[in-house]
Length: 133
Image (cartoon, rainbow, N blue to C red):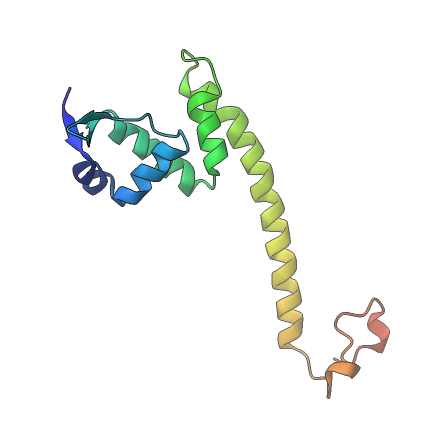
């Protein structure tokens, strides 16, 4: 299998060399072989980096990505690895959506504010009867 220098891996994966060193330091990527002190990566690392990128785009943390790679038996199929992580992440995303919708509603109300001063503004009050909007 082809061996690649750190710069070549970084270029092909679209990441910085410091990112690769960081992934190694946290145990996300296996330590590469070294020849004369220089890292030499197996080309299979490119697939791992592709999965890491996909997982990051889906919002997974580094700890969750580590679980994806190393938190299951080696023979566990990808679908069985993704499923529990994705179910948990979907619940987080749903909560974020609810929060974002609440924020949007508040911001829309703020755009309509016609109060003469913050002290008289009733947008945040529990009783809408005192609001001057």
